[in-house]
Image (cartoon, rainbow, N blue to C red; front, side):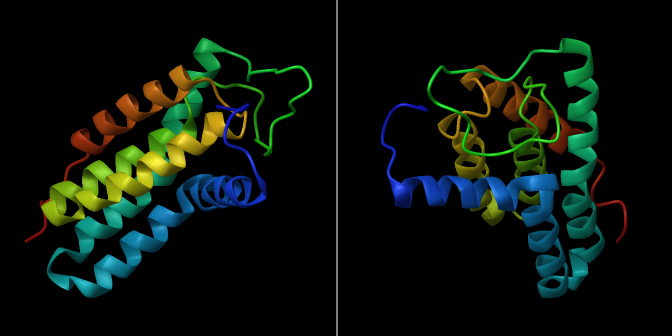
Length: 155
């Protein structure tokens, strides 16, 4: 992915997706907006929003256990930065799929958010930050976290 379909516009989109996925920021914003739009489920939207940064913490614990280094492609430096040299699993994928899963549990029509989650996850190998298996593992971990978080406890 790091060697195909690159141009200034495509790379700008990939970098933008990477930036909004940092620390689960986009998911915090989406969750807060949806909490205001749907106050009946407001607490659940906030829980789902906070899940992004929480999932990143869990993800980092897995990174420390696995200790897989980020990809190195000779002559093709990564097109983004990262707070860690560890690659497996992708924190962007973990947080994105955790939040998309939790938000879809609150409102099935929120399944459209999986498109954003997939785009954020796919940009990681495109930018040379992760191996595809890092993203797949992050997505699986994220779905698991999104299914495990308790929702609907406040009525």
